[in-house]
Image (cartoon, rainbow, N blue to C red; front, side, top):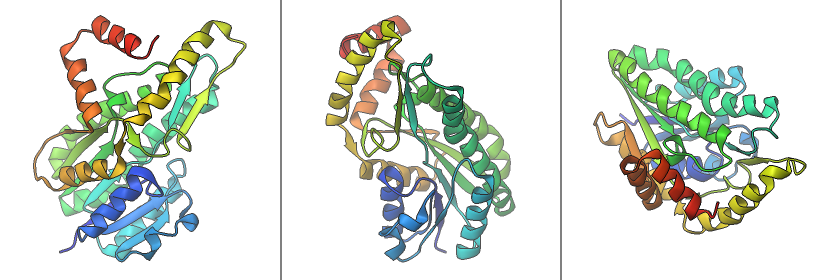
Length: 271
């Protein structure tokens, strides 16, 4: 029987590449996004159902899940990919933006999982794959909001894996490094207040290094391949690292104490 994956944030980047990857492998795909009316390519592909899901709109989450089940009969894998990065000074960021970062990256993701769980429990099987980041295991400067949300994702995923065993469901975490997507544009929200002069040298040094960070990034198709492996390897493996830079960062983070690792980060980015 053909399997079905529901993907959040499928309009571009990792989500779109993964939708096309699974479709090419013979899966049914429920490709969800905030503005499905603007999607032209995925709607032309066989066995892909494009529909609306906004992580801060509960009704849209319920509708997308129900619509997908009605269309294909079941969901076998839930891929929580949608999210964005709020960076910059905590002191210069409004509480509205702080709450939105966690509403999208954490609370919306949890609500999507909760919405799918009755279906998974009834069929006694399912896989939840959460797209985290190396930023869920280590932090870059000026990323207190983004990294806070991804650290939360790592913790909730690991804890969730225990209780999911009771209903036959597996939890997986995919941790990409720097990927060639529009994250640094459309999905990147930077907050600053130039009147806070004490912080400006740090911001200038870090922002000058951002372009170099993305210069050696990996393609989104590579992450799609890792996601497919996580969905089909049949193991209880929890974490999957995606990208050579991610492997390097993660190895260093495991081997070095906090002081040494953080000093290395400062040296690497001229801080």
